[in-house]
Image (cartoon, rainbow, N blue to C red):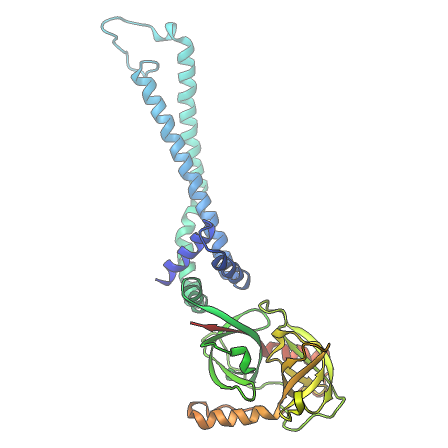
Length: 370
């Protein structure tokens, strides 16, 4: 049913039969998935070619009907000598003008038939493309199960998008960290890398009090990463230290954005010791994004900001990450293989090079409720 569903979705899109929300999602899917965009283009070309062929066949049929009617009325003949109740009539002399028209029509029919055959032969690669198109479609369906599941569950299914934000890998096996409030009320999540590629994820753990959550990518298209380039700092950061973050403040667009600031207080809102205050401009999509120091170490998780003060943001301290990892391991032994990277390979790189190494491990999050 997957191939039929995809073809039906493409044809509904081309016919303008999708609802606005469906159309917006499908167009985003085309933009983010070149294979599906190519399939839409090819299918549209094929439908146009079939329409043109159908029009030509219909025109040929109409010409044949006109030709047959002229024959039945005796206005033209195909070489036989007509008998009009014993009265011989010379059609050439009596209907010389009509004969000329009939000849033109007959010649037109012959010419059109020749053109139709020639056109059919010239268009055969496009018509035969249906076979190769189907084979290509089958290969793409096998290689793109994720996109098919998206069409089934989100175009036709009852899915409500609740929230979005940023996240980052804490373990190369697909474990991501984000804020708990990013996943508020959600039962499912999808994550997107900096290129816009989507991966299915499950919510492994949430700690509302710490405002931290762990996602696990469960997608066959995701390739585990042996070593992450950054480490997660266990100790506090010095006051006044410059920090930066990268994330997805332009949610739902998968555009990685860089922000820089400095640590303005070792404590967070109302003296919260599990968080710190950062002087940095941040937007809602930045929630769950990593905060780095100049050595490329994660020192916090960007979480909130003051609504009535410019550039005052708060981050959960990175040492809290270790605590929720242990809580998850203790509550579910299936996650006992999580291992946080302590080493850091970015300390000798400048910020531009650090970001190039980091951005591939920062993901946008979309939280859903089914």
